Image (spheres, rainbow, N blue to C red):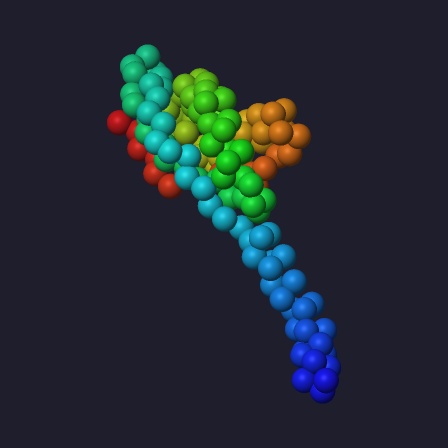
Length: 132
């Protein structure tokens, strides 16, 4: 009987720590790649250039992977429309890329909010950005 009491006390002491650790791990930031990279034609003062962008999004919700994969066509379409409307001069600088990242985040969040009722993503990160 004494062993059961000790086991019970041990569980009472440890359970809050176990639950908070599990909660912390489900709310940890994760990064999901938007694959494959986007390749878009962009205007450079009347001549056409190619832009290749690889991006990842940060998420905290455990079901974000499935939601982003399911809505990938709408996300890619919105990003292609956003990027193809840019001039090379707008996106060549660091400030231009930062502005573009914020716009991409806004577009993705708008789609996810409309489709799922949640914004789902926290941020967009460009992992590759090539203009040729």
